[in-house]
Image 1: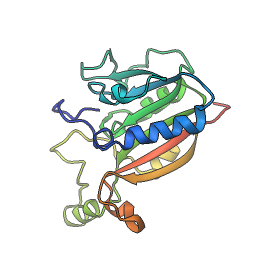
Image 2: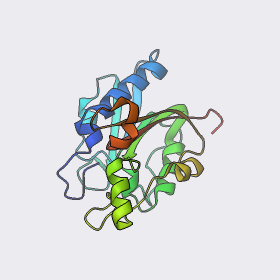
Image 3: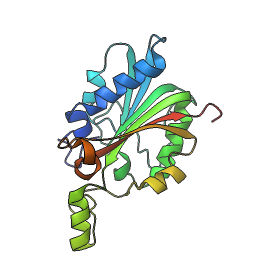
Image 4: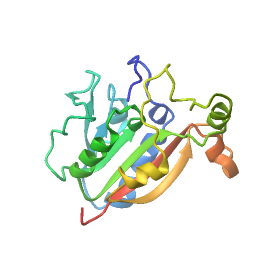
Amino acid sequence: MLHSQGLKESSAVQGGTALALTLRAAQEHFAARGAVRLLDVGCGAGSFLKALPSRFNGVGIDCNGLASLTVNISYEPLPFPDASFDMVTAWQVFEHLENPFFAGREIRRVLSPGGILIMSVPNIKRLRSRFHFFISGGILRWSKHNDHLFVPLDAVLRKTIFQGFNILGRLYADGPIFVSARSLFAKNKYYVLQKTENQ
């Protein structure tokens, strides 16, 4: 997703973590399949989609006017039938949404049973964020200076957006590498989720 200025890519895409996680998940879950149908939610100008290998049939949506499909996923249904995609990606998107719960239901609807959702959100456990909260009572990346609205706490995600998914993995990345305390320093948190077969 592009930031509100429309010029800066998310750190997930810039740093290469988005592409690496997507390729790894496709290899693990869709190796026997030829083409992989992928939806990139909040695609911005499409840099992530352009970086994908040719086996991906990628489609991007955003509300910024730069994507080929303009959809406000906070309130507008995705213009795809049920179970249209093998994978959905959302890089630094949910924290910007006015209605992330509607968006989560729409993503679940368009994913095939067994499909993979990979998403990233800001890491609120980061030491810098904790210190800022202690001093100011606010969360660093949810301020009047940016357009972050939804604070994606794990407990809230599990009760809402992750309903109907199994969590396959969590990763803290995009920051200094401190293996034993990555959650305290990494800028972002990544989730790899699989839609349950009965959804």
